[in-house]
Length: 154
Image 1 (cartoon, rainbow, N blue to C red):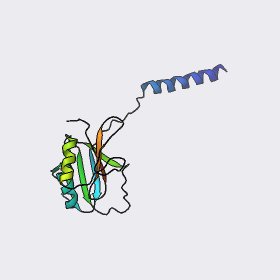
Image 2: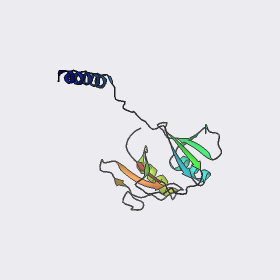
Image 3: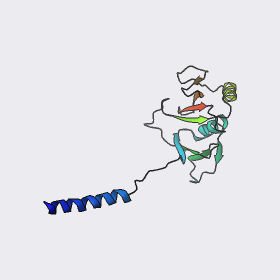
Image 4: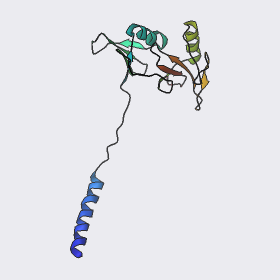
């Protein structure tokens, strides 16, 4: 009995020391870039530069079917022209971006005749999220939904 207790105690001490010495890895992630598949690269590039105001940056891949853009916070968006087969778009799966002036953004959409709607699907209107942030939704040329809101991050 004592022999079994000693074995148990040794095993317990080994396991206890391992637990105390072992550090649990906790990942820390941030967005590096986003990539979406588009069917018409030039049309999509025009939308993301002229409607959302993204700056086009050097495409490091040098591939002619890819163009790179950058948000104000440095996050990149890569547009990749290829087949969209199997890719479904719905409003629940969307990109959200904060804009510096939502009322002016809405005026710009109206002047360029770009359709927009509220989360509820009401055309040409905005709505407030539960946290008080105002938002509109637009679709890019491939039907991807984009939430544009007034969360003041500038």
